[in-house]
Length: 107
Image (cartoon, rainbow, N blue to C red):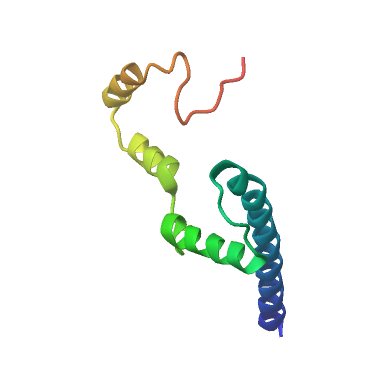
């Protein structure tokens, strides 16, 4: 029963977000593109299609959960560096007195 409720909530969220984003894309397109480039006005469904096309072309449909991203990869590299390599890295970064991946020391 919990899975069904969770699925309904997710589906409702997706429908609401698609509707909101569709109207945002429609509004922005219709406000800017005809005046700037002489394009035709879009309907809601055309704007939603444009949003999906942009997502496919530029964002893809992959999940980000479980992927550490560049910060996680950098932290892993930092932890495997020797003290000499860390100091060489600090000198190359020119980030002032900041120490990457360390918490400020209380006086």
